[in-house]
Figure 1 (cartoon, rainbow, N blue to C red):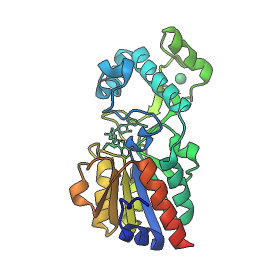
Figure 2 (cartoon, protein in one colour):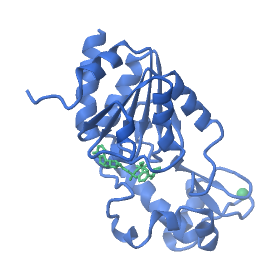
Figure 3 (tube, helix red, strand yellow):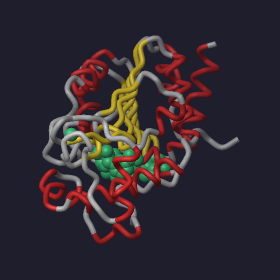
Length: 252
Ligand code: NAD
Ligand code: ZN
């Protein structure tokens, strides 16, 4: 048997905890084939995400930004959740008080079965009109593929993805929910996030300040690695199934 990359202490603490919170980032979806912002992204490599994911870019060229999100939505929808997403859906059933906080917008946690989830940055499967707020229909999105900007059929407003752009506020209540979960948590897992995008990056540190045992799971040490209790180096899709199986065995 291969040695475990995580400690017995982490297993024991997870097995005993009444309250666990988890933060995920783009890294947990990497093994599903969804590029993180640092990975090369083919056609879109010529743009920096920061150049497209903001309201100024959108108002300057709605069709360009809509096309980028259509591309990302299609990629996400044709990929499947991986064993890392699945293990977190299972962990939710083992712990009485659990919250999964995600920075991802790809909907893969939900597709893996997670239900106790707070999305900090929205979800690309939903789009709405910037003027009247109406949810966009598939039909309203169709012009994008043929080279024209998608507009609302009710008021002509441009349609935008329901995601948080650079410079925008997080959805109301999402950050409060995440902070409260971090404050309550006895164990906090930070998974597949470079921990450079605030305020999300500060959440594991809130957990630590309130006494949680904080473990990071990443293929390389992140920006907050020096401030956590344990750094587990490995792929989320390999580490998480092994960790959750060990916790389940200990809990039963
Ligand atoms: P990031 O791209 O900054 O960092 C990804 C992290 O994942 C890195 O630290 C990397 O070392 C790690 N990683 C890569 N493969 C891994 C694996 N197999 N297992 C474990 N860790 C792995 O992503 P971020 O921290 O989430 O922040 C960037 C922003 O980009 C977020 O706001 C997020 O909303 C957005 N984003 C989302 C998606 C998505 O929804 N899937 C994809 C790209 C970017
Ligand atoms: Zn409208």
